[in-house]
Structure formats: C-alpha cells, structure tokens
Image (tube, rainbow, N blue to C red):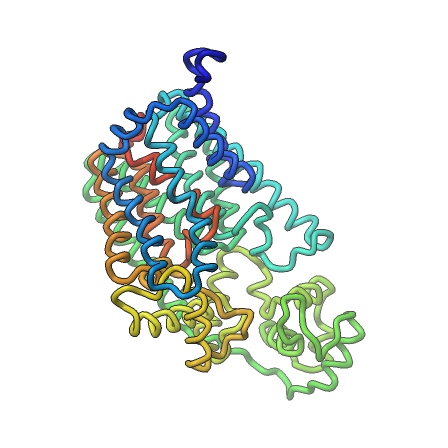
Length: 480
C-alpha cells in the first residue's frame, strides 16, 4: 500500500529503519526497541505479502525451533496457578515472537547496508560507553553512583558488557581494511576491564580467542593453534590456583574497636555503627580495609588512612585491592567470596550459587514439566523459605542461569528444545563459515550459564535479533 505513495522501495526502507531501531535500541533505548517492534510489524501488515513471508519462514528451520520454544511458554500456562504473572511474562516475550518474524520474513539488506547497520551499532556502543565511563569516573558523587555496576546508565551492565564484547568483534573485522578501528578495539578492551562485568570479560576472551584461532586456521598454522591452546590452559590453571589461595591478613597490633569508632567519627560523617553506601555493616568494612593495608584495627589505623581511602570505605570497598579497580579487583573479590562463604548477601558469586542451589532443589521435584511460566517466582520464594536460606528477602531472586530457568519454566523437554536451538545455530554458522555468527552463538551458550539473558526486554532483543539475523547466510561474514 505504501508503494503507491512513497515508491517501490518504501517497505524496504521501513524495514531497514526497523533494523536500525533494533541495533541502536538494544544498546541504549527501550523506546527504540519498542518502536522497532511496532514499525516492523506494521510494515509487514501494510506490505501484506503474506505468501512470500510464509515461504521465507518455512525455509528457516532455526526460526521454526525458536517459535516452538516461544509457544511452549504459552503451553506451560496449563500447569501454572498464577496466570497473572504468567501473562505478564508472556507480554515480555513478545520480542521473542515478533523479532524473528520481522527479520526473517523479508530479505537481508545488501552488504553495504549491513555494514551501515554495524556502523550505527558501533557508534551507539562508543557513545554510550564514553558517557558511562565519564559519568562514573568524574560525576559519580553528583549522580549517586556507588557501585561499579551502576556505571551502565542505559541498561543492565551484564547485557551491555556482552554488547561491548560483540562490538569488539565487529571492530576487529573492520581493522583489516581500516586500521583506525584498532583504537575502537582498544577502547572496548579498556571499558571491559574497567567495568568488571564478568559476562563482558567472558565475551571479550571468547572474541579474542575466536579471531586468533580463525586467523591461524585460515593460514594452516596448526602448531600455533596448539601453542595458543596450551597458553589458555596454563592461564586457566593459574586463575584456578589464584582463586584457591586463601586471603590472609596480618594484625600488627591488638584490635580496639572503641578507639577505631572514635577515630572514624572524626574522619567521616557516616556513623561507625551504621552502614556504608552499599548497605554493608560499616564497622566490618572499616576493619577489613585497614587490615588489608596491614594496618592496625585501632585509632592509629584510621589515622593512617588518606581522605581518598576514607571515601573508598564509605563507598563500600572493604579491601584496598578491590578499591583500585579493574579486572584484578573483580578477581580478588571473587577470591574473597570463595573463602568467606558464610554470608552470601551482597556477594554476587555467593548469591548466584544460592540461586542455583534453590533452583536445582526445585527442579528435583518438577523435572518433567517444570512449574510453568507463571509460578517460577512464587515457587522459588517458597523453596527459599523451606530451605531456610540465608539470603535476605530482597536478595531472593530468580535462578540467574537461563538453562535452570528454562527447565523450571518448561521442564526437561523445553530445556532440550532450547539447547538444541543453540547447537543448531552453531552448526548453521559452521556451514556458512560465519565467524561472527559462531562467536555470537558461543557467547549465548556460555553467558547464559551465569545470567538470565532472556528475562528482560534488552536481553530478549539482543538474543532474538542476532539469532534471527544470523539464521541465514550474511554477506561478508566469512572466516578471516
């Protein structure tokens, strides 16, 4: 219909605008993601070439499985008691239905247009990452940014970290023709290390390894591939060894909490018997920080602190090594958690382990068909109570492992469909020799072990968009 008024390419241009809304929106704007869904759906309805849409969708087996996975959630309502929660979850899953249809029902853009899409994607990542970094490092106090995870102002720091890693991959591809993309690649690397998002670090490591192996295999450097694998094994072993080492502090004098409290009140406005800005017990934060410097847990230890260190303690840093930032600080934090696991609250790794224990306990009773999409939250909360979990009520969350979440929602059959979907995606990328698609698929497979990637609009859009886009052969996405 629009072709009569705006020419023969009207629907093609609207479709491309829809794709632009998705690639920019999943970086920084829920509004653009929603507009992409609306515009893409209206464009298909107005073009009304339903016979061609059906033929294209029929040819795409990956989309078939994805749509089957979506409709299993509707089926799970049959054994859900909380239909209100179930329909609310299904409303969020609209992206998983519409985005694959919107993208697969029409041809992919030309190679030049696809490059344009990724240019907008990289531009959005660069701009938002700069805003995030500047805001956190120069205006944190004015913006009330306490934790490094709050550095991501436009959405989840986990999902944004993954997007930065994928952006690094696009930048590495473009470095072959335009050398200045090395600057963008270095910035994405720096941002990942600075933000301390483990999903982002995992994605970046995967991207760097994938590009290195692709480069070596293409040039038949088998010995180098073996050497690279050996280095990776050695580094992984060193990491495991580092995390396994207990953290020891040395007391240089008898502790004196009364003196320490009096000295603290002279240096800070936060009450010593209160909480730091992260909600942790301040007295414990102060003592741990002083001891991490091999200082004295008394008045002299507080007196030896600089004003910057006082501010770090107020912000909730309980060890000087954590306060120094970067990936090293994140790894040290994980190491501390592993060796001080008596209280999981406010410790991301320990909380996740408790989420997984709670979820697997529930799966043991509902392994066949799950609890249904409407009852997952209620059942998780009930199981926390039954197990007498140490987690505070406000920290008793969903599984934070999408494989466990899928099993709880849909049962063992739904989990098999989802895993089969991911494996078939990887197989298709190998057939098409699409490095970018392989890295995207492996990123999904690995990061979904430590987060609920499809539980938010941003996560759903990222998954559905890249999955649908790379379900077909993409021009210029071959091995290096």
